[in-house]
Structure formats: C-alpha cells, structure tokens
Length: 380
Image: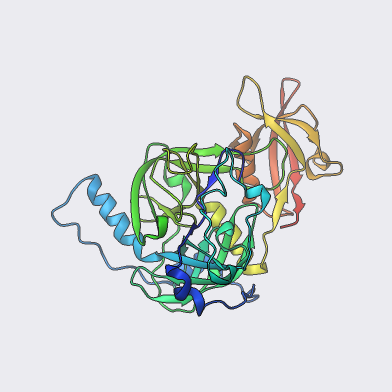
C-alpha cells in the first residue's frame, strides 16, 4: 500500500493448518466466465432475502448492531490460503518502520509451504466472493469456510493489484450473501461494523464510526491506483483483510484492507475500499478477467488555499490535453460533482471506463471554464 498504511494481510498460521490445507494444494486456475454477462448487482436482486432478525426486547443502537451483525455475518467467510513453497513477500510490500511484512508474521511449514488466514465476503447467492489481492496473490490453493463451518475450494476469477481486489468463486447455490450498500447513504460519524477473521478467529464483529470518507494515501502523480479510502475506528487486526465493513442495515459499504499503526497492531485507525469501487472492479473481473481503468492524463496535486486540484503537468496527447485542459488549471468540478482534493478525482476515475465522457469545470485565470473530456485507457 501507500506509505504509512499497513496491510491487514493474512495472519500466517502455525502447523495446525498444515494437515487442514494439505488436500487443497492444487494449482490455482484463473478463469473468466465470458458471456452472457450478468452483473453482480443483478445476481443479488435474484437472490433470496435473509430471514428476519428477532429484535424483541431490545431497542436503540444495540438493536441496530444486532440486526446488522445477524444480517451480514452469514455472508462473511474465513479464507485459508496455501502459498507457493519458498514464497516471499515483494519488496514493495515490505513493512515500514521495521515491522516485517505488513500484517503478516511469517511461518514456513514442512516442505517450505506457507499458510495464511484472512477474510472474504460472499456477494452473490451462487458463490462469488470478494477479498483482497494481497490475500490470494501467489496462492496455490484457497479454502473458504462459511460461518456454519461448511468448507469449499475457491477459484480465482480475476485480480487487480492497484485496487487490491480479487474476485473468487465457490460452487454453491442459495448461499448467504451480503447485499451492496452505498457510500451516499452514510456519512462521517455514522456507526459501522467490521466483520472478519482476525488472528485466525472466525466470525468476529467490532463496531466503530466512519471517521473519514475520502482518506488519501497517494503520490501526486496519476497512476490509476485507488488512493481514497473509508476510515473507521472499528478494531481490525491481521486476518481482517478482505472482510466486510457494513452499515447498521447490514449492507456492504466497504472491503477492509489496512490499518495505520506504529506497532503492527490496531492503534485506532482502520481503512476499507469503498463499495462502489468494489462493484466496478469485480464486474470488470467477472466480465473480462481484468480491470478496465480510465485515465484523465494529468499530473495533479491539491490546490493551495482553496478546494480544488491543480494540474501541474499533462500527459502528451492524453485525454485532458485533447479535451482542452491546460497546465495550471484548477479542477473544481467533474460532472457537476465538487472536487476538493486529489482523492475526489481518483475516486471518480476508478468508477469510469475508457471511452466515457466527463465534463470538467476548471478555474483558469480567474474564470470558470467547461471542458468535455473523453477518458483514455490505462491497462489493467
């Protein structure tokens, strides 16, 4: 991740899991389902509604927590990954401040095999699961354990390293799943629950509030990566990676990814990938096996003394240059949505596809100018 953000990663297990995973050690196959394409949202609409939650004798915020937990828990899974023998974490994922690999304590089993424990979220009744790229990357096998202890072998449909999202599939029907929510329905200060398998423990729920909706971890250069996250103070630790962040209705608003910490353990700051990004990337992976990433073709930084984003360099023959954007323009709006910071632009771009048209309003020499821009392509 970016500087200062620590992957929750996988909690690497002791030899207790050596026998448990041995039968699963088969080469993984990355597959794409092709056409006809049915979006994940459509699959959710076709799914059954979960049974009602009994809230008798309980009122107030505790009722909300109880409802949200009972609604979402059955759709959050424990993922046990078996990695390639001799696998080592890449240098760019090495820990900051001397902590070792972010969120991972290494354990090598007999034969050089490494195993790890993390989380995932079932998002359709036919068994599509979203988790983090860093959980499944280099995995030789993946076992998914449901809340009711049913176990499945999982296959990788596709992965995207820049958003840290992976889409998996298990064979099942009428599985419990977590319905998509919306970031527009929640605000800073709202209660949320984090659900996952920290430190190898199944079905763990913690509560907190949304501390920020667009926390930025990024360089100033546009690179097509996700850089804007949900920040919460719900407790998370190693193994929460890929788990669910849900609202008080039990709907998915984010996929948990990392913590900000000087110690390697939870220190009050947790982060999640917004649900709109999760839906877009997972649908791309389902449709094509890769992510289609849109580029504005600019190098940007936050404007000084005002809301907005300063363009300090243009990509030659890029989308912005073709659309009439100039160096020193300050981007104030995209499609009538206010732009206050770099994170706002990254969030918008990651939800678009190459070829989409957007309308930018920029401040140039004291005047507000409108520019039509057709977004170009960044290879996924």
